[in-house]
Amino acid sequence: MNPPKLSVIAREAGVSPSTVSKVINGRADVSPPTRARVLDVLRRRGYRRRIPLNLWLFDLLIDDLAAPYAGEVIESAERATRQAHGDLVVSLADAGWFGRVAARGSAGVLLAGARLTPPQDAWLRDHRLPVAAIDLSRRPLGELCMAAVASLVERTPVPRSKAGAGPGSDPRAGTPRQAGDAGF
Image (tube, rainbow, N blue to C red; front, side):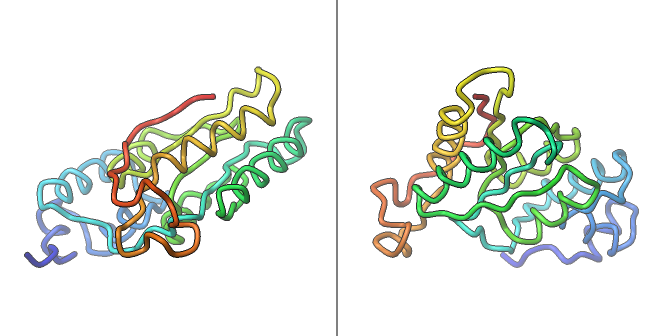
């Protein structure tokens, strides 16, 4: 079955094809009601994201790089991601972060003091990207970061074709990812 064309989705949702593209790519400049309408049509039409997941790339979304906990969180998340043979991208919770996550095909999002908007949360769930939130009021932060990254790795699928290659050398090969959030 061929994927639905943007023009068909746009016509059914009552928007322009560029608006459909913005929703698919997670851009912030679409109103919540319009985004919901487009996402509903995409779901009904069976749309699936074409950007392949970068299975070992995780995003750390932090609310304040100058916060007292920022250095420890970044260092611990980086160490945990490296131990999982992955990579970490650190983003400040600004207006553009979400579009960048969508464009690079990250395998999951780690939240440190940042909150998702309802449309962002819906988009991540629709695309089955796991989210793990670090409870910054708990200690030790290093252990919490390690557990959060481990949770993301556990909920990231490893395609059978990649099993045995690089970080994909993993007994979880071929297991489905579980959608949802984890809090640590």
